[in-house]
Image (cartoon, rainbow, N blue to C red; front, side, top):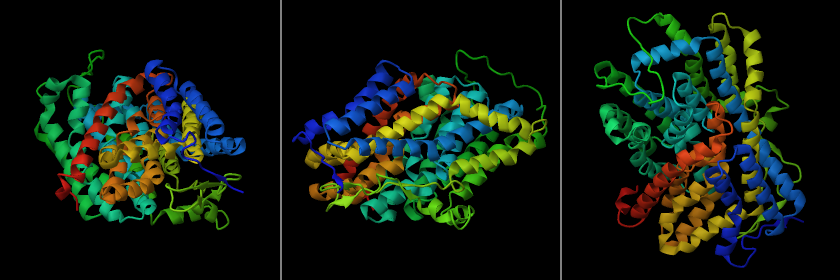
Length: 551
């Protein structure tokens, strides 16, 4: 007999929600106040969630432990797999000396830290988000910025903030596609509304990055680049999300933004070059000591990476990649397998679902089609292009990278374990149901559900899977357009990505800041709050006085 979720164990939904949030209070306190190491904060938060699930929500001990292990397994694959391979490629380029050529080529394009942040964290990171998602862009771009000489805290923080703009359409539009599938609403309609919310934020992000780094006055010195980047990205994001669908907005916006910035920098340079106060500016004078061929060769790992993750993410390609493992293993890779002792062993109940329904727990082992494998193959393909560097150095580098990331690996596994124990116990739904009691104010709080989901899981896709059905049901009951509520879940979710413990662990791993997760959390917290408030107000306006903005 299945265990049945109870969303209001204390017979008062608001009180139950306050108690359900205790693991989040623990995480906030340990990271923001105590500035504890990520794995220590994650261990306490996960322990609190397991105890509450058992003692308050009445979840059987076996199911509670199993749900936590299921989440930890998802943290290891595919999330950790992406982080390891992405940092490995960066480490190889450093060890082989190729990153020195990359640094020189970027410095000759622009040695200004503000422009490098816009070019790499915002534009190039958006392309990687659009093709791979799931932490890949932060892992790659944060490592690149540190290699260029950025202060590690700013490198990590800037990349997390920049990653806000593309998240909703990441991984070839998977978050919006999942939102449509879970809610039963038209995916194109949801894409159009997201495309009428996020561009207002996207156009601000380049300026936001610069102001964060150097203040408003110094940010205005690169206003032409800020405008080109913001307008190119936001305009393209609106056009592709509204007239094509959710699959291409990030990829095309990033490409158009990169082209726009390169063309601008051919005819304009800032009057003064800005660096961080505590760094020694690199002196780039005279002709480049490297030939064009050497520069292309040094960039080749990232060129191959962009191509690989683009094709790897195409829905038409994935079945072939899964099938590459052999006829016997292909169904397991493509469909996943039922997690023993957890799959369909729990029943979700109303109002989360219309009628009691079993809660599935499928674990995908799509080793070949995983984004991390695309990055692994990229690294293997790039090794022969690195002079005086071979597989004899590359393979040990991979194992050194795994050792380097041992604490982030532990943190990510525990954070995903925390997310799943809260999902399967019903605690996440308890918090979600509390928001539905806000009545006509629900449009303001609707994005907060998405923000909460991404904070918990580190994924806009997972947040949409968790709350899209609830968003539709509640919106219908309060007279709000359900498409707007589901879209707001995705748009609000992107602002929670930068403070998700999973994302912070990825960023600290890439920038060698392991143990300083609390410091990075404090750095990004108020940016997340401000951006979330922006989306909340916009959604409220679109629900009532600005309905004409909706399709």
